[in-house]
Image (cartoon, rainbow, N blue to C red; front, side, top):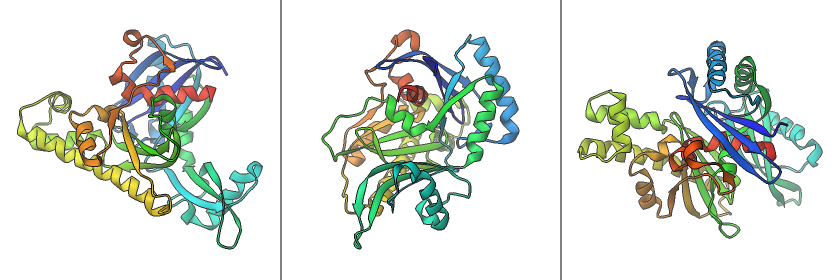
Length: 351
């Protein structure tokens, strides 16, 4: 693989692109770019086949105008309706045939990966081996399935734009690679919460190792827009964005932001409860929360979540190992929160 790689994160408002210089022991952000998209061309992380040609044409022109010569791409996958994740116990299988064998298990028992359809592209993270009450060997596993149509449409867009597919990964896993994460003793868990325009992703992890992933709909940044619009009786987008990010004396705005913050709190709580219900023996206690994505910059959100969960809440920044000139390459706090997924995806070239 070439030493320069593009990480591409498809979002509802546009495509985030990070050009990253990768080496054996180094990662440097060359530049970060954002290509806006018309509303609904990407919906909840999915591209409708009818939009492939248009998005590809716009991306090709955008990359040409920005004089981007790098062609190798690692793309992110974060479609809320097409990605299925479940922490579960599977039968033991030898590593060389694990994915094939578990694929057959899922076909025979759909409860292993709820919602997944036939032909799902599967990956897994294995945490360890255990025995059931009858002494049979089992594996504690995080199963990940993706509807192939999501991958196929994204590949079509990128190839039509003149790019080469070097790999793909869950957007959430890209975030885990790029963000500076708290260092804690073994067994202590943290949350990484990415708030996109339409999808809120919660990753329960131990020092960057994902224990559970939940993609939540109806708690993204556009929900905040809708709540504020209703509160102030005005649909002016600039006014709404200003209300989200700057101090305001308008009590209607305060109430609207608090209402949206409660939606985010509820979505995070549901993800935690889903995990603990499936593994009551683990009794995990969350030690801290890191926020990323454009929605993480909502005024007072971090403070509200801190008061609700009674744990430290921080807005994510790129890991110190990721270099780049802050002013020129937009690696300040705001841009870190928005571009971390694209940077982390590109970092997958060295992982």
